[in-house]
Image (cartoon, rainbow, N blue to C red; front, side, top):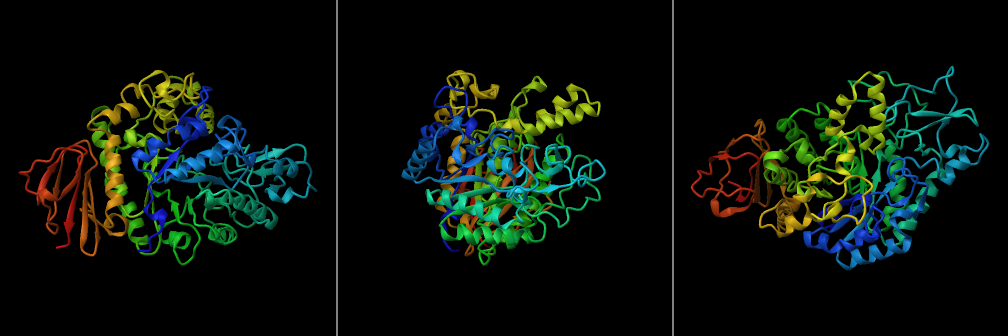
Length: 556
């Protein structure tokens, strides 16, 4: 395999508002991130991804940008960013930024000018349409609930917003708009950053004519985005973006690509196309959204990941993740933090981390952080949660029912402040944080886990070191084992006939491992989250709840 730095990398996603507060205002900032770089270097992180740090009214916590080339004041200054970049590079850590190209804030000067009149020279930089018999131009629903259209009384037209009404969509059909964005991208690359995670990139192209959706909401609570997601022609935009910007720099580009299948992904990330380094696929998200009370469907999860692994092997590259700022905590969703926090957090980590691709860790995931506690609907900060509350109330749902649902699904679960120690405010700030700290911080925090002889944190550090040391874990072929097993997720990573077997019980019940075509030896065990009985028969053996083992193996 061609050695490319971002294939060797381990990425750590930082939600700046919640990582570390350096100035005592209760909000994380750039200098706070800088103060924790030594921790990330100790962990073995090679890339940090910063969620948006640009100037913003914060309607969607920074994903509504009012100035792409300025830092949000509560995060610091451009000088603070330049210093953070230099200090990260000095430690061998690269920095990628979130890049939001589908929409801006309604406070961006481009939109202010665009909405000033129908004759504005920037009118066509956004998507404006006349209404239809006193109603919006079509029946599209916002990804954040409600209509995707808002009427502008001053000009009498509607503007499109796939997200909140304060996030008007940019019109990528306009060449002048595209090239203004490319100028901004080149400006950041010229500062020496190492790449971008590109938000909502599969939504840049809208269906010609903006036709109605035949069934806008599909199954209950599963909206249909087919007219503005992965539309034919979107890759033409990605081609031009890459050609005008990324291809001229040694950078990592990660597209957030909802609606893209593994087969289609080859066109997005294949080395021959030189479009993007990798994409963050959404397919395994469906296992979260079908029923928030359901346990993990191991067979379905294995089927999804195996398809991505097999399809992209030798043709493209995977981005591997279980958590991010848009999802609740994985140990609460698919693990058991009450009875088996260490075991379930480390088993899930082992399962995804050693596949072929670049692993992503979301802040706090390396501690096995669980969902937080909510006692009142007023505690939710996220715009999607607020919209969902309004929608469910309009349907007659009780506040008790709404609270029960959002406690499982709300994005606020993953946005609570990072717990650094067991002091006041979890060591995140000297004052009350912008979002209440997770009450488990007294037991689940960085200081406690670094001091412990066995912890989720130390296990993640071992995983990172193992992957860095073993070529088979970088480019070895993935092959699934026990493909019908409902508890055990097992696979091999082999390179030139040698490599590793990864065996994970992803259930809270004991499981049996049986495999005839693979020889396991006790002395070849390289990582485990339980003590292993050296008298086990390794052709078939019992796995305790959430037990994970990694063996060095050779093909038989």
